[in-house]
Length: 308
Image (cartoon, rainbow, N blue to C red; front, top):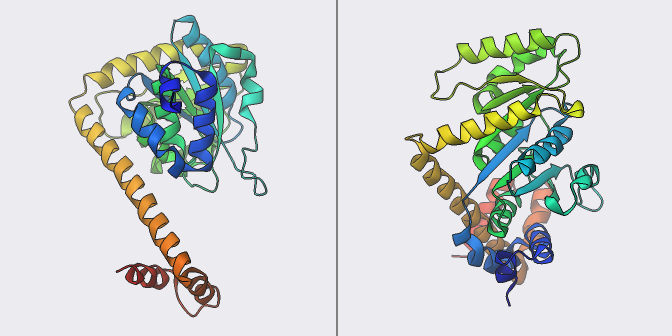
């Protein structure tokens, strides 16, 4: 039986092996993805992002408990910074959330240098979890500030987590993060300044463009499991609104285009690099770039012309 077929039958070990494969050798996973892809696209993907230290991991863990209690099949993808030595995930979110046991499938993904707060393997990891039968996937990003707008491309619902005491830093959200958030959570709301932070966020949201869904600003103390139920309710409400959104088909087409473009770019790069290495040109061109005799764009053009 193929690895894809084992995943569709609910084999956890097969899922774990496939996730390792999409991280370490995406090309080798092509056949697995092709087999399970018709069984993907269902359920809800919830992206949870915010600066380091705001309590994202704790909130993810508590939300997992909430949705398990509501009968949902939960998967967690926690994207961590990569070790510069091993390429593995540094923070080890799996250790922090392992208390959920076999009820939740939890996986840490290393960014491996990929920008935007997510890992290159993220879309395929989501697809594998959906094929496995998970109908609610919590996607926690690295937490690197405004570069994390990438999460909107993968998540059906995006949660922005902040903490009180940001002061003028809240203003920085206006340039990008405010536009991608579907739900805003002021975590550690027992701290001084929580009410002010919530007021500022609500004011900025009302000053922004009008939407069919007005993002709520919710208070929480995830460590004490306070306010988490209300966040889960908001996620489900947003899911219902999203399904009736007339622009939903357009979003699906945009997602399809992004996935195809990414796959095409990866295949073209792999082909050019492999052929250039076979001809002995790869090292030669890299040497010219390293010695500043050729710029990177010129090198790419030269390698591309070599293939014609």
